[in-house]
Image: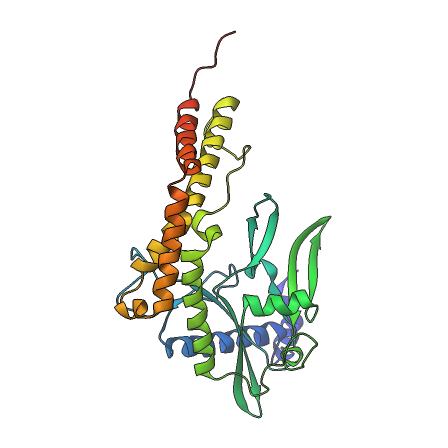
Length: 318
């Protein structure tokens, strides 16, 4: 084809170009949502990093604004992920990838389970009666509606493989009461209300990281866990057994570790002025002292020592 053959086609394309094509509306909505969200965050003592790659539902990475601690501090502030949305129509469907909302962990029976991600926030913007309004939902709040059946999902399938499971929601859905959930306020949430929710969630996340065994220890190693390097099977098996014993020993000591961390993370004597708080800490210390002074804990230490020795122990000849 040549210029002469396509001249009229080019003229028609230019003259008939849409005023507001779909992709432009989508880009504009995304920009409005991110702009309003950014202003909301920085005005409420939150430091904000913008994500230029759309990953894990994080348009923004946030933490509490403080000059005392930064992300490289020995005790850094908790990080939060903020996903922003703007919809002009309250009936417009918003889809949230479940990978953004869930963590996967192994329980005591070594079965995989799902738990909600602390520190995830969905902020939805809309205009109502010619005024901006906004709503903020945590992962736990979205998943509570999902598990109760108030919200449904949609699967994306490629061939025989499910590549994505997304939860569907609209503003109007959230404004209607259900048997399990109260409706959101029709006028939306104030900047102050959203700020309080975010700060409380980040503070709670700090506490979870400090006091939750799963977060502190991670998952218990399995006998067939992948081992780096080309080692004989008996060495890999002995190595993973050693890791299991180390995990069990640390788990048995974790209650004392948590108490000590809690004491260290208070910067004012006011916490210990409360008699209930003092008695609770002393009770936990006594429980830990009783546990660590018994023969079982001592045997666990000895078993770990033996397991370390056996990793490269030469097999006995018959």
